[in-house]
Length: 240
Length: 295
Ligand SMILES: Nc1ncnc2c1ncn2[C@@H]1O[C@H](COP(=O)(O)OP(=O)(O)O)[C@@H](O)[C@H]1O
Ligand SMILES: [Mg+2]
Image 1 (cartoon, helix red, strand yellow):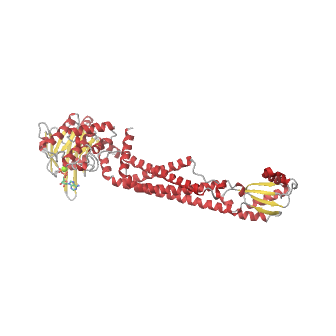
Image 2 (cartoon, protein in one colour; image 1 turned 120 degrees about the vertical axis):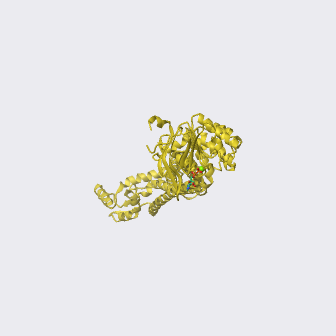
Image 3 (cartoon, helix red, strand yellow; image 1 turned 90 degrees about the vertical axis):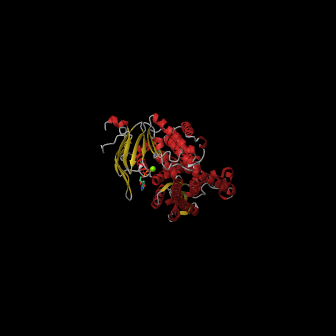
């Protein structure tokens, strides 16, 4: 891969495999490359390996085999300090939300910005803006544990995008939302994408990626199956 | 700037959440500081008393004859054979008379009819002022009595000896309570950090996930430790001061007041004790946080 192309690449996976005991091949030989500024939907049935893939991209899990590079960092060789800095540039909406139930909505959202030492006014205005867009402004001071699943999901999305990351990873971000609210979330993601943010959204909700020009990768039983359109997401040719 | 603000608010939040569990540590640290400073105060006052004992420390050897230069040399020789001394002074008959007269002040005329050489000559021996020499003072005086021409040996009584073994004992107690202070403090700091880590487990995990730096996670614990040290030592010294005032008002009128005044630590010693406690607690928390969180 040339230096120029490397600069344009946000995510680079080469023959990544992950097996869980006893014998679950959650990912098998996955190679793919996602360029900066793209919005990609990662689809596949439940149990296909979407969550496993996202967890490895944010460094919670390591692959058994293969090579992962994010924003030019080889995740198997990255130092602790670099990983911390990289994580501040990636916003993650986890499938299980990872909210702190006894903190307020605003406090939960603030975490992603506080670790980057954002100023108080920035944190406040950003929180209010996102909560307005996600129709949650009245819940700002409610405890996260008291919210409904759908509300919690939106809070976790707000936390993921609040620090204006370069890369957003979202795992089933509309799994608990009705169609109308799901549309709010998709609009939010698109507006970030228009500003140049790279997004990788794992979902099995066809409604949110079923629009002309959407870019979709499908995994089946841990293997890459279909890409649409095939030219946009290049399959990597093994380890380079 | 933003880093400091973020870390301070993080610290503040953590304290607001966990202060109840920290109370026990605070009380323990306060008590340890109180115990240590109490003995240290007694010790430093005892040393002060020791410094004022100058005159009692002197051995006075009364002689029957005024010694000439040769004899003086011989005495000096014999004295130094027993022990190194700080200083030896020969006091002649006339000198003794002058001193006595000086002490009498207004009533000097009682000496009018008394011959000027009625007082015996003497040797004043100032032993070296270390604990070893002072604890041998009794043996020293017995030795001096065996020298020829000695009428009598006088010294600050046995209590000087006892006093110095008391100081020696105090030294041990101060050392022990100081070690106790260090042990309990570092143990309690480790304990309270473990409690905080436990009660903020989920939060710390989240902080990792969103990419908090090591110092962002560590510094609040460090500050909490320092704050515990500051509060604990201040409270301990304040309690000691109250105790000190109480003792002074209740017992001062009696006994020792005229002889030595019991005094509190100077402001700089107080600051020193507080600063040392802060360093101790902050250092303790630094070590335990590395061990517990491995960050
Ligand atoms: N920690 C784990 N231990 C064992 N098996 C796991 C673990 N995580 C995931 N799996 C398995 O790996 C496969 C892929 O899971 P996952 O990535 O969560 O799928 P998806 O997110 O696409 O629904 C599933 O069969 C799941 O049971
Ligand atoms: Mg999943």
